[in-house]
Image (cartoon, rainbow, N blue to C red; front, side, top):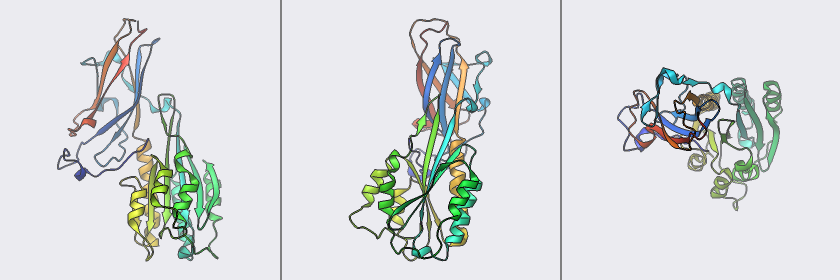
Length: 313
């Protein structure tokens, strides 16, 4: 599943203010016949599609077949019940144009690693004319920092095979995004570059995008005379493009990307309640979930779905 960041001005139904604006998306819904527990997994984002975490049961209204569930339903939110893995792939442009800057690039990467979530697995790749695996997925800050510090700083190749590196990664197959009440696995690719693809003209932007598929992509671009921004903006999920105007602010770009990954991971909720239904006859029940005081008037202002109460008694 891909999460796209779209500015408020892109939707004619958006209000002039994004205050109290919530988008909702359901991932999975089901019912437990033994306990009559109805469970739903969903995500809440703002008008710019940035994740919104920290909402409590009191922020939501749950309606079953048109009736609001009261205190007897024992509505709860407990994301800790679902195993959650965050996958992150760093793809770093280490070519001659950044020679003399690699030390600061390492500092920026290590700052991101130091802010990683406990359940976040990071893999590190570098590219010049070829793609190179520096470190496979790991949750160890020590291992990841050592891998970053091992990157060469001198004698770098004068060839930027950006599209080829993405194609060789085969990003669409690197991990599976899974959202269910049994498991969550959510991944992102972070690309760093200061230039343009110039290694092989038979490899195209379209091929690189096809290799990415529907996976989420962030781009941290460093301003330079060789930088061509438009292809990088196309590679990134909308809103996932971060431009560092100089090497001194590259660290902030990496930290902003990590903060966005963290906010998205914290915006996935697992809500459950006890249904009053005690009829075991198979029946499709309407379930509506919405945020109180939501100023959103678009279709994604609420979740409208259903569950079957077969076996409830």
